[in-house]
Image (cartoon, rainbow, N blue to C red):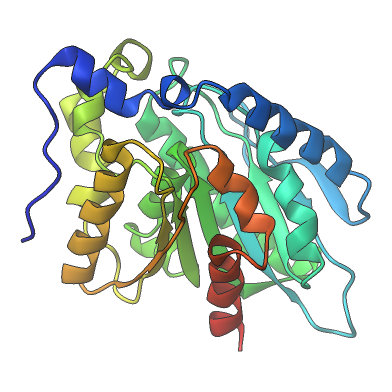
Length: 287
């Protein structure tokens, strides 16, 4: 087993490793750009707004389906927003949708209940319910249930990876793309995030993709900004090594010059390695 990233014992040093907003002081401008993009995206025809995928708090999604050509069903990319499981909204990554729809790919973005109202284990259960809903309802929306891809940013990357650890959900996933994800919850239990996340030893053990096995046949793409903190670089490197050793097909995507926030917009850029990888993942499995 390759040596894992080592987290400092010093509290201030540990907290700094996970404080993305402090590491990127102008992060607010990027988030505002996400929100403007998400609002503008609604001008594109084909949206299904606030579709309920379950009865719980915030269990709803937005789905953009491109115009169908003949009887063909569109592959579907399901993308999960970040925010340390405690903030942000599906609308913050809705702006990515039109770029995928222009390529004939349906795009869904999910809401879920947030900490501390619920724990991370409950959020994982909601995301599983969302995938189940989309898989069963895909034909009704004009999507191919055999070509569903999941991805997410930061906490969303964690949730996407978790879907690959359950037999019932992993069987419905053609590919997974984690962007700047958190894959080991153990250091967060010691961090400044703990009062909100309220992590228990049980949740750390059952909801850390790093210490869980991917299901057979898992295809995983990973990207982290080269300008992110060492913790996020380490989280990705550790997951890539562990899941490769467990038999998953892992592709690491270069993201030079990007930080924890600027990496998101590159998913919609088909000329950038981050965006190219998303399209390549979908194209390879959709043939």
